[in-house]
Amino acid sequence: MDYFQGKTVWLTGASSGIGLAMAQQLAAAGAHLILTARRAEVLEQVRQQLAQPQLHRVLALDLSQPEQAAAQAQEALGDTHIDILINNAGVSQRSLILDTELAVYRQLMEIDYFAVVALTKLVLPAMVQRGAGQIVTVSSVAGKVGTKLRSGCNGAKVGVLGCVESLRAETAQHGLIVTSILPGFINTQVAHNSLTGDGSPLGQADPDNAGGISAEECARRSLQAIAKRKDEVVVGSGLSKLAPFLQRFLPGLVRRMVANR
Image (cartoon, rainbow, N blue to C red; front, top):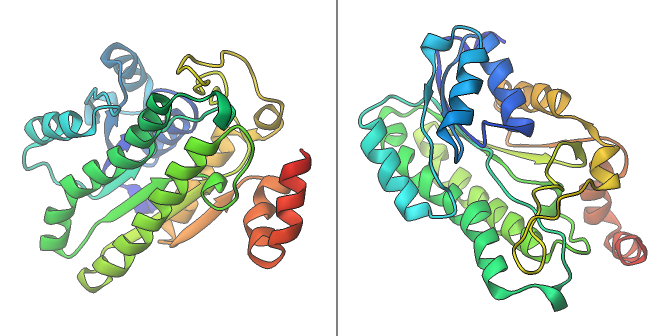
């Protein structure tokens, strides 16, 4: 993909799943990567395994603390020219509303919503000044269709998509590109790392995700949409890909299907 050749891409959630697959494909396409996740040692292993590792750098941040993460990033990046920010980091949930502590909802919002806003605000002034740049947010089909056991995740994903819509409208006059990626069921460790009602990880697979497309295929389709400067794209297969379309035109049917799952 020539679109990424020589571009500086800041990618969060780069150590596993969709983010890792994106990092590998972006590096192969000639991008210069800033790799962000919580653990520097894991990111360094990722960097060393990428094409032309000397072109990439590691920036470990804890995105559950958005203000602190943004301040650390500002200090580390300084005046670094960032062409594309890909807000890919996120956490999911597997717990009933009845069983979920309020602190878990706050953690979901910090990572899935406030961290996206904080990092976007960090890169936005320079992009506006240049009149160029692309901000990508990897949200979820959950931002369009509510499901059981994901109330906090659904809420954060709906919120971030709403924020992105405003961002797109506000920055169109400055020539910026704003892209939303909505993955459906993807075969990653997202379920293992999902938060339960007390904040502990689920630690096991989810049949829906296990039957989804691979992280590599999701990354490939997502990067194609980014390169085509699309506003929004749903990435997945089967029901998870159709759900946003059905929600728009047959919301009653979708609600009954979700309630009966």
